[in-house]
Image 1 (cartoon, rainbow, N blue to C red):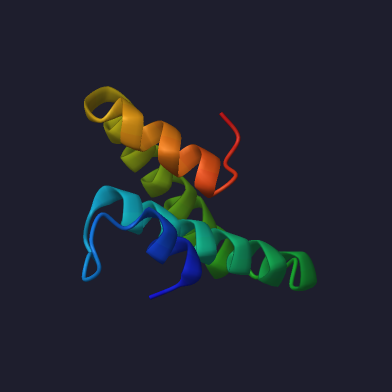
Image 2: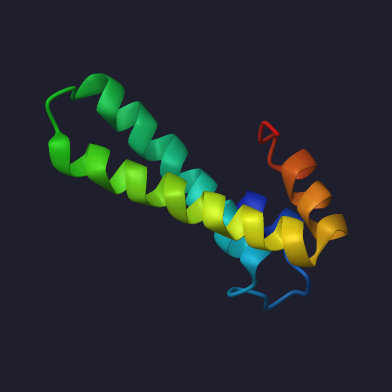
Length: 82
């Protein structure tokens, strides 16, 4: 489990909640962004980056609609802009 995921996890063995999924996607987005800056012609990775960003956005929208306190917690701990 990544450090970011541990920060937002609901309990110790939490791996599937929206909060943890957002943390994992944030790590993936950061890694893909670094990779794409070095390899500008890698189209497959840029498609994967877009999919990860869109999935994270959907999960954040879900949290905002259903669990506003958890949404604010995730945004602050992961330093996401919103």
